[in-house]
Amino acid sequence: EIVLTQSPGTLSLSPGERATLSCRASQSVSSSYLAWYQQKPGQAPRLLIYGASSRATGIPDRFSGSGSGTDFTLTISRLEPEDFAVYYCQQYGSSPLCTFGQGTKLEIK
Amino acid sequence: EVQLVQSGAEVKKPGESLKISCKGSGYSFTSYWIGWVRQMPGKGLEWMGIIYPGDSDTRYSPSFQGQVTISADKSISTAYLQWSSLKASDTAMYYCVWAPYGDLFYFDYWGQGTLVTVSS
Image (cartoon, rainbow over all chains, first blue to last red; front, side, top):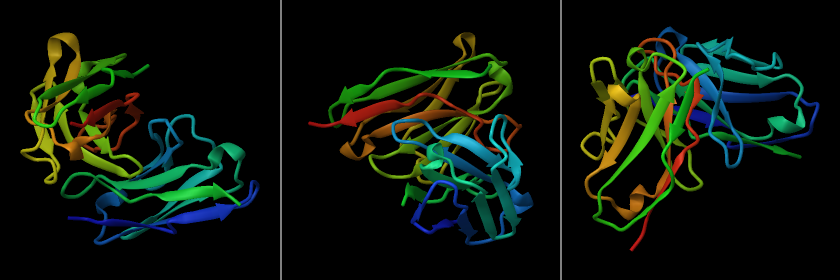
């Protein structure tokens, strides 16, 4: 079973700064089947990135995903106030078909 | 546009049964996988399982196999998540989710969530 470990647990930054979130898999994620989600308090998660680097419909281009194998990154180029939230990575290529990381909280410094 | 509308919040006692629902619209219900994700209070996301309403093919996370039942009624475009005997540890928000691309289980649309509270 693939285990996803996200780091850091909490990231404190200011609007306008660049955010780099990491997701490391315990074994290689097949075909880069890695997604990223954003969740704000009281809301359902929203898909940001799939296939490691493809932006979902309507997602601003300040969000980008990269990586392959076991190491993946979500980058937010210039933080907007609405970007402060919890971010989850998810793999969907290997048994048990779908697993999520534990999340990274992006908070305002 | 794809919409997933879930049933309302539930308050139940330990040992009771429960079935919550998720009605899909805006797409061909029988042609896409629809699943469930749990979020316990203050915690992260956990994938529970998923069903293909076209033929009722159902896959479960090993963590939830035998603990819940996922089903679907094609005639009313509705998926279900069911417990036969609830525990306090089932207290959580449950989201239904829609997989847009075959059996690649990333989730492009989410329901609004159903809060289940189990307490004596």
